[in-house]
Length: 216
Image 1: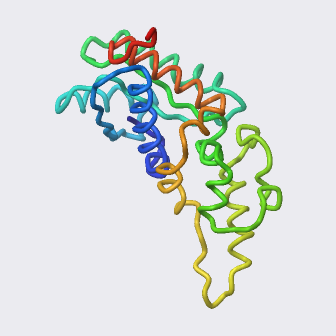
Image 2: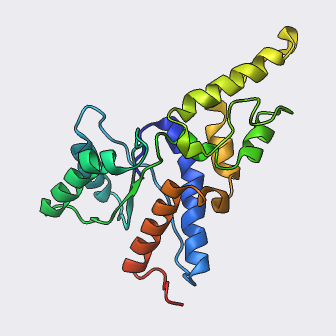
Image 3: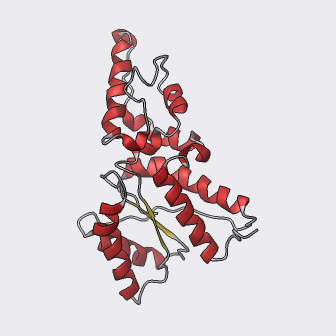
């Protein structure tokens, strides 16, 4: 797996691990999986980041499927597919050194924080508030929020200001990525179009590699 940043990895690691295991179980597979984060050189182009990380890791271990995360920063995935993934796929086809050419995009609409809000009840529980999603400005489909990260930060600011100053330890958005990633249900995430697309694409890859049989 290659992600945009460390906080993204903290959220995605458990989500991806549990998603793949659920797909394998649902379709009668028996293979065990291991998720590893590949380090990238952020100073390079997107394609070179992914290809070089892929080449570097294959010297140590075999990669079956490479999941590549990039936020859409848009209302859908069209922009990031056109600007990043289409050139990446073309360059991968031309590279004879690569062993793993099975690439699955992980593209949350707008930002990965929209996926963190897929289960609003879990989110409210984790931030320990009795306020409603409407009071915190979190009402609506998370994929409709153009900046879900700022929405979360604003919500945290509201609840942090309510705490007594003497006992206040402000909750930060960075505190939430891992715990929500570990607890959020896949069935909640799959209701989001961008996650559903990822779910179907990783299922197709597992089918292609004969790790599952979707026809069962």
